[in-house]
Image 1 (cartoon, helix red, strand yellow):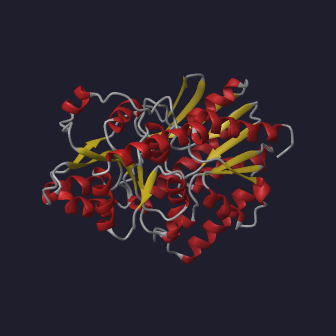
Image 2 (cartoon, one colour):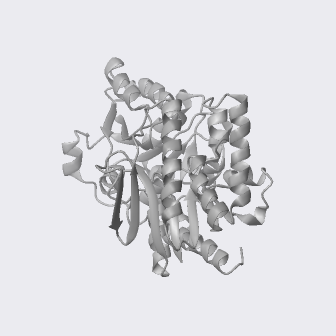
Image 3 (cartoon, rainbow, N blue to C red):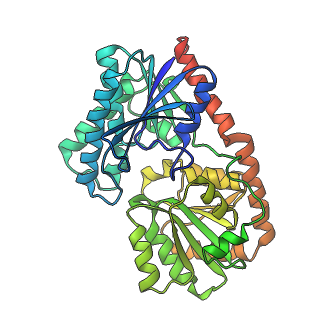
Length: 400
């Protein structure tokens, strides 16, 4: 089949960001499918750029977007891409199937256009429950806007041939809109055991980044936005100042990046390091020389359905994980003894757990081993990409 893959944030491993769609594309190509991706970037010279990367046909639309933009600015960028992607998609020839992966929900519009005008079926992948996330976070308040967004969400789900949700909570959220449960598959985010693994720490890299080799290191890596409870971590960092042998390391980017940098300077958080944004290879090296991974979200019910990349990369790296979402990720780390849950409203609890882990090296080592085992047996991309392909193939022979 010729598959059109709609993913605004599509990344290859050499570019910082999530790579789930890249791996699923490669897996689909193993079975002879041709993949064309439509994505956006602000870092290209042309308005529309076409190139082939690892056999994937990538169409990149120039859109000036960043997380630092306000709600209106981001919405304009989303709509701009939605319209251009729809135009490009309509001009692509011989498309057999569309895969559209959120967020935001607007990514479903070009898929809906192709179905209505050209009869091409589509699979919709739910990475966050939009519009419920912006509604609960206060980003979408207008009653008419909420009503329209909920109607659009239901239309996208109803017209999809199949839906793939990234967590049990997301699947439940889709089914609650009236979609039959057998139309929704749950395939979570992916561990990458060949990209994140435990090995001898890179002492040269630590030195170049001015990281002390003997400290107990907690790492937060990935998105640093409104949903990620960065203030919560920084408050805990202030309480940890009396523990000079504990260090908090941030890598990634987002709207809260400046808050981290400012807090380090104004509060003299000498135990906190912001290192910036790195590609997968360098991120893996940095995660490897840390002791524990931190995965936090704001204490908003809908965010407990999250399926964060950083959690699965941490499993691969063999790192114990601290989570503060009282949802399926808590159950995962507790049931598999590969991490701990902390109270999302208590930075003091976070500090207590960090100190406890620092003082219990054997416990930390055991949790790390359990994390790696879970990545290898349940969540590696070799396993989940195959599940993804099975959904696509079932559709192609009319079994889904």
